[in-house]
Structure formats: structure tokens, C-alpha cells
Amino acid sequence: MVEEARGVPLSASCVVHRGEMLELLDEARESLPTDFESAQKLLAARDAIIEEGRVSSEQMIAMAREDVARMVEQTAIVQNARDEARKIIDDARSLAEQEKQEVEEYIDGRLATLEVILNKTQDAVARGRERLAGANDKDVLAQLSDAD
Image (cartoon, rainbow, N blue to C red; front, side, top):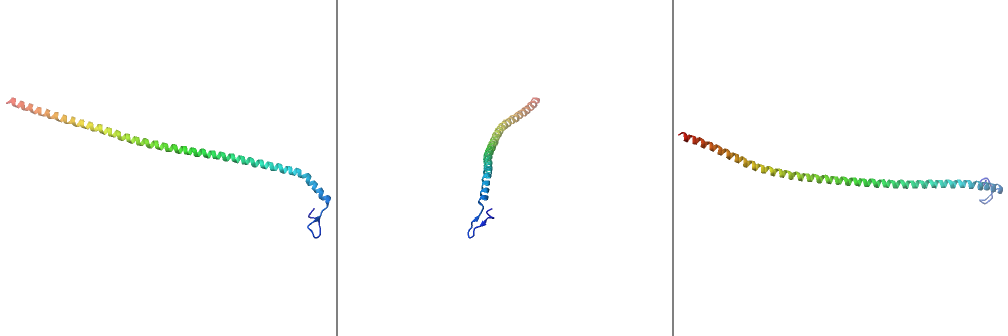
């Protein structure tokens, strides 16, 4: 209506029919509350959806942070357990090697003692045989001197 209105010469103004314009404004006023109310409902629904999304995303972020913290803690616990297990195994190996050396030294000492005893026994056996052999020679000599 404004576009088709007659312009006033030498100005930017135009002439519109007052009755028609008022009628249009009344119609707009009557439909405005319904459209305005619908728009407000849409905005409220949009705000509620946005708020729900924000709350949901904050919850998801908090849960993700908790999961990450738990995983990091578990990783640290597992690493500590592995380190402790490695230390225990190394200590056990060291202790086993030390005890093995002690046992070998003990066995070597016992074998050395047995070797000394066996050598002495062998010497005693040899001396005994020598005596027996010497006694037999004396017996033979005694028999020869008795035969004369």
C-alpha cells in the first residue's frame, strides 16, 4: 500500500488512505498477539533445548573427565605394580644367586674335608698294605731260617 501510494511532490512523503491503513494495522494487531505468543513459545522451547543440551554436555564432559582420571589412576597403579613386581623379581634373583654361591661354597668345603679324610684313609690303607706285605716277607724269611 505504501509502495503504490501517491508521492508528495518535492518530498519523500506519500499519501495513503487512512481507513485502509488503520484497518491493516488493526488486523496486524489482532494477529500479532497470536504470532507473538507462538514466537515466545518457540523461543522458550529453543532456550529449553539449548539448556538441556548444555546440561547434558556438561554431564558428559564431567563423566569423561572422571573416566580419564580413573584410567590414568589405573594406569599409574598398573605401572607401580609392574615396577614393584620387577623389583621383587630382581631381589629374588639376587637372593637366589647369593644363596646358590653360599651353597656351592658349603658343598666345596664339605668335599674338601671329605677329600682330606679320603686321602688320609688312602694313606692308612697303603701303610697297612705295606706292613702286611713286610710281615709276609718276614714270615717267608722266618720260614727260610727255620728250614736251615
